[in-house]
View 1 (cartoon, rainbow, N blue to C red):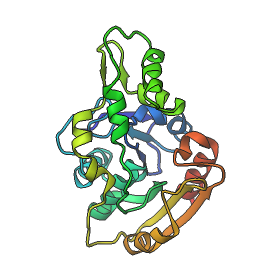
View 2 (cartoon, helix red, strand yellow):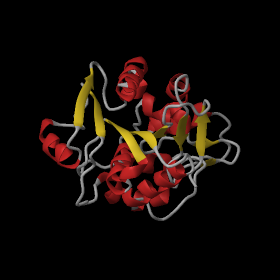
View 3 (cartoon, rainbow, N blue to C red):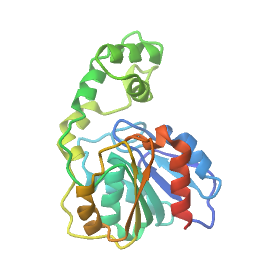
Length: 252
């Protein structure tokens, strides 16, 4: 099963499962998960090929959805689910293929469509870091910076660096090989009848007006909210606003 970080104890409310985005980890969500755990148990997962979770040559959304369903099955079979970017796509496929497992769905800054941009340059940048002799994350960040990676992403990527072992906690080979699957979205002949919140950054272009018809086809009860001043990394850029939106939706 996926590696999980659990915040808080079970309550009368369904637990909240959080699925991170590409190159992320459960640890990235620690502050928000801890704050939300004052009302309900919150479980953040390391997605496959990330963090401490198992590695696999397969990295597509049906497989990731099955991973999440296995975690929810261990939590009495139903949960509220929030996912960002890649994790948001996995959460959508979870709701479409395991509808009974999801009570409420939050999709953070992603749509159920294929995207044309590639994340491969970041894999090449991480592969380009000489990990031999590195004792501090700042040394790896400097090497990433020399390859043109912006400072915010330098620190984000190095959170997945195991300094003692001198390796990335990311299966870079599998992620590179499966990048077309990650950037795409599977064709699924289904819709999910539950309530879904599509929460986007107002400064992001990941969820566009032309995506709304497809979102509503798959999620007829979709609601749309934008966080002013936030981009794609809305939970990191506007954590309090993101938390408030999540809390208000889940408790409505």
